[in-house]
Image (tube, rainbow, N blue to C red; front, top):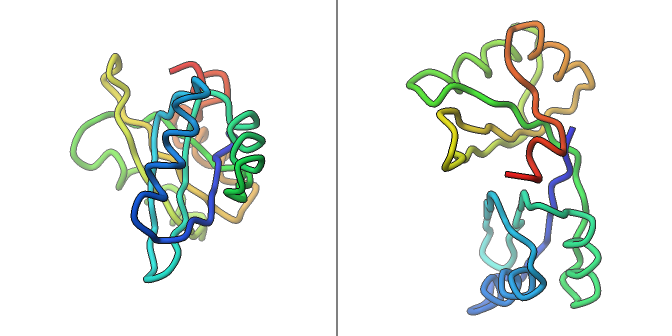
Length: 141
């Protein structure tokens, strides 16, 4: 499991820019960012190189951040790669709460990040032949 930084963010002009500038000025490098929005607030999910430091910094700046354990899996960057992963989880009755993907610039694979409320997810994916990434694999991208 890796830690994702989650921030409940007011949906106002410039607020997301302020959040990302805060991290950038501190030298924290984001590898992936996803925003799930509603009309007044959104949830920002971030994979970065130093999640605990990012959480502490964002809390100090009044953003209200938390760390969420997620599974990150290396998947071949080809059509159907994500479908193969989701089918492996589905065959075990696991439901994905949310997911997002990104491509590493120096790799021929994608990284799929997802949250599953089932402790068996990592073992199921490894048994299906997927490479589950560790924190050091992902933070040092």
